[in-house]
Amino acid sequence: MSLILCIETGTDICSVALAENGRLISLRESGEGRDHARKIGVYVDEMLRENGMGPDELSAVAIGKGPGSYTGLRIGVSFAKGLCYGAGVPLVAVDSLLSLASVAEEDYRAGILDVEHWERARLCPMIDARRMEVYAEVFDSDLNPLCNVSAEVIDENSFVQFIESGSEFLIFGNGAAKCEPLLSHSGVRLLQVTPSARGLCAEAQRRFDAGLTEDVAYFEPFYLKDFVVTQSKKNLLRPTQ
Image 1: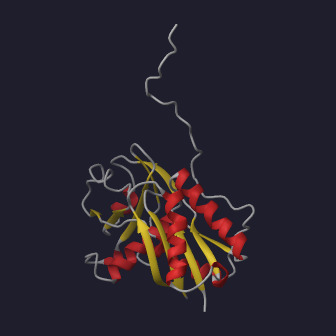
Image 2: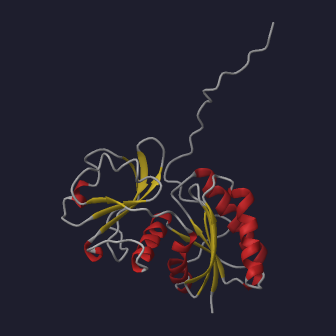
Image 3: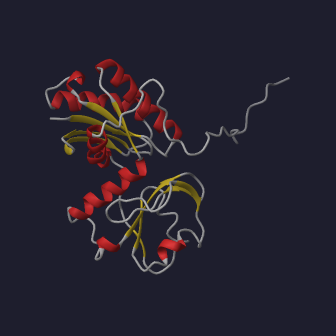
C-alpha cells in the first residue's frame, strides 16, 4: 500500500491531498488568498491526524512543481522538502499543468463537466502569468501532451493550429477567463476547473511506482520564467527638511 501526500500551491489556491494507491482519500484546500505559508502546515497536520498517522508512515510526498506563482511554488516546495527530510521519504514532482488537466478529466468522469465529445477534445489548462500572459500546455483527452509547456502572450492567433483541427478546444484554470474574449473561434469553450492537489494523486503514484523521484537537496520548482522584482508605484514619503 502506498500513501502519498500531495501538495499544490502554485496559484491562489492552497491545496493538500492524501492518496492511497493513487486514489484520493482526504483533501484540504482554500482559495481565500495567498496565505499558503500559514495554511499548508495546518492542513497537513489536520489530514494526518484525521487518518491516524504520522509523517513517517507516508510512502512519499508529491509536489506540483509548476509553472505558477513564484512565491507559492517556493512555499510548497520548501515545505515538501522539509517533510521529506524529516520523515525520510522520497519527493515526487508532477507538472502542475498536467495536474490541472487531470482535475478536468476527473470532473468530466464524475459528470461535473458536460462535454459532448470528450474523446476528441483538446484540453488547454492555463495558469495566470499576469497581464495577457499564461502558462499553458495542450493535451489530448488521454492527457498526452501535444506541445511543450510555454509562457504564452495570448492574442487571436494563439493555439490556432489546435483550434482549427475541428476538435473542441477546452480552456480552464485561473488564467483562462481573461483569454476567452480573444480566443473567439468556434469550438473554444471555457470550463470552470481550478487547480487542486487531487489532480496530482494518480500521476504521483505512477511516478513513484516507476522510481521517478527527485533529489531532495537539489530539486527546484519549474518557474519557466525568471522572477522579476518591480519597483513599487506607491508614493514614498520624503523626509522633511
